[in-house]
Image 1: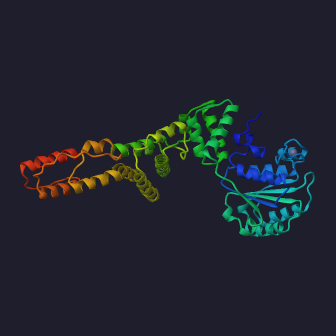
Image 2 (image 1 turned 60 degrees about the vertical axis):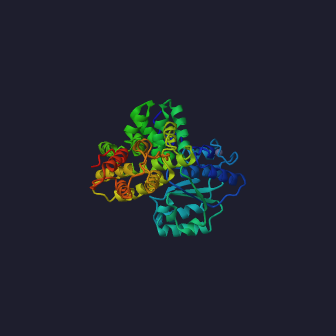
Length: 447
Ligand SMILES: [Zn+2]
């Protein structure tokens, strides 16, 4: 048998098999059962989510003599002739290549003729938004007074380009982007039936890359199988699709906690060496921090679309990041995403961005520090270093009562400006106290 791509081989033949559009299938099936058939349908939504497939099933069901609960039987003469692309009653037109007025005029002629075997003559126009204005006007005339046997099903990815006069004459259905898990489950079905071993992370990579489009996921799956054979793991997929390694995002969120500045340069180099796009990398980073935020807020990973293994990693951030810090990071990164597009040197820009991120003081640490400075108490460095993000009770350094107000002021100013060169004539006692505090805070010698 010759090779058939998965998207075609697994194309649903009944409504029940359409993935992720249950809200539409149910309504349409009920309409068929109750014989409430519209003259024109408009299927809108992103590519690869089942619009044309649903249009074909609907067309078949409308002409099927033995439809069961609104589903086509796929056995009778009319179903068969359509499945073999021999139906004279169901006509499929590609709006992109038949957009001119002449083509719509001949369509208007064809509409007049009665169906041959079925009850309806059905016209499916794909990418209907591609029609010219004249064509739309010609089509509108037919839609205003269609013969009782004619049914139109329009599909479009750009519903805003379809004139309102057309939309208002159609029953409109909005198709959803398909959820990650629904795509994954469909790929598992295909893999099982083709005896292909593929792990959860690899499936997640493919499904994520498809971004809600099942057809894209199936094409990627075919590509990955041609590349890797019967046994597929995450590394094969990520190599083939040149995906940005998720690990890199986790190493960024870890280095913010650990204040590991060197990582900024290592990561930027890794992105550069792998030939990854810096803009894709930034949007991945935004998604990563958005995932941490939802995990921190919800204390679970309900809103995170990723593999089970990766979800476990997100759970570890609970208690390590505060909501306000994550919001600050996300606000900063969305600004970066815009500016990066204009940058002449994206690698350098990324290094600065990552250094900034790693250098961001956590909100709790800042407010804690300010409070302590105001009250004359100072936190110990180890405590800030150990868990800089988490709010922690800070022990006081034993203070001496005889420290002068002047010294306190200098010290506070010092601490506020991260301690640099201060020249003053302090007593030995004061000097040693400040040295102790400074050692606690930054480990630098004060002279
Ligand atoms: Zn049938």
